[in-house]
Amino acid sequence: MRSISVKITFVLVVVSLVGALFTSFYVQNRTQQAFDTFIKNQDEQILVQALKEHYLINENWENVDLVFQKVYPFILHNAQAGEGAGNPNRTNDNNIGTPFYLVSPNGDILSKTGQGSSYADRTIPQKELENGIPIEIDNEIVAWLVPAPYQNPRNNTQQNFLETVQQGLIISSLVTLLIALSLGGFLIQSFTRPIRKLASATEAVASGDLGYQVDFESKDELGKLASSFNSMSTDLERADLTRKQMTADIAHDLRSPLSILHGYTEAMSTGKMTSSPEIFKVMHQQAQHLNYLIDDLRTLTLLDSEELGFQIQNIDPKLVLQQTKAAFSPLASENEIQLTLTIQQDLPRVNLDPDRLTQILGNLINNAIQVLPPGGKIKITARAERENLVIEVTDNGPGISENDMPLLFNRFFRTDQSRHTDKGSSGLGLAITKKLVESQGGVISIQSELGQGTTFTVEFKTA
Image (cartoon, rainbow, N blue to C red; front, side, top):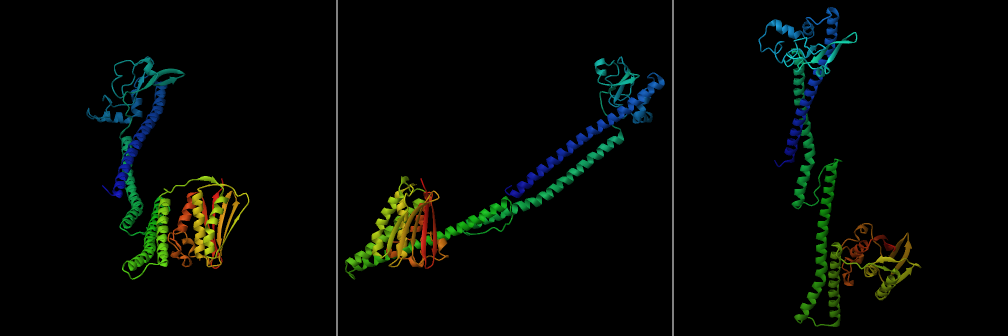
């Protein structure tokens, strides 16, 4: 029994059947008890009134059995019919008769029509009399109406009524069971349909069809599950495409310097080219680019696995900013780029790793240097704003298009203007920068306009 539909159907059948049987039994039992109580109370009132009238007329209890036979005519009818000893309505049957005895105040049984024979040959104790109903005439108890040991006050008509009720309960229980199964079957199909769709979709994704979507518009928990699956499938497809693109980019970035190095070394080893300082400089640049790429890949892997260590300290960011500006000033001058630093007075301290902050600023400055032509400007500003340290790196370069803005922090992404691998770029700098900022609780954002330049903004909570 592997199908969930079969399991749910089996549970529904068992629960419905047990519920129907229990309801039928309980209602039948309660109905029978209530009906018997109703008959007993009704006959009791009639019998007490009839016995009082009999006593007022006769002033004794002679022929009192006639009163019982008038109240319970089926006894007299069956007795006159002369039915056999096995007749359940005979008055002399040990277990059949009227449900009451008439007993004198001293305990002597006055009527012989009561059911059972346990009282027939003995005097009823006073204690048992008190469980009966007193028959009072002029505030004097003249007799007691005592319940018989066996209570079966129903005649054939009354018994037929209860049997009709019982049959109705059985039929209604069966109809209820059929309705429950019909509605349950419909609900089970509605419930398991999205599960079957999700199962098929899971198999499709497992077989390599990443991005597979489930068409299900319900707003319940299954709808949320389907929506989560669709989001997961989309993310898997995007991650797979990113992985493929990243692999292609890594291969491209590795192939270019390796091809140059291989070409020079092969030419020099075969004697087709003689070594020179210019050739060694080119080879050194390509080897340095490979080193940058490998280091950046290692850093990004450690950030993804959250294994990169941070030495968080309470630092003065002013010192880090000044040191970073001094470190990049020669490179900026070499490229004829103006690099300036503006720091607000009383800059608040922050809890950061100073080396990682230097790496963040260096990546942003280096990225700006790569995209700026000679004569460009880079401005670094630092200020306190709403209990945050805000650092901005602004350039007056070509800017970034709206289409490229969402992709700027993707790995190996380069705008057309900034794809200059000869300057040591691996295409991972901004992706690493974003990870470094967020890993220390910060936020990085970008504003840019084509032809107007770009501003990177980094914010950290002050200490």
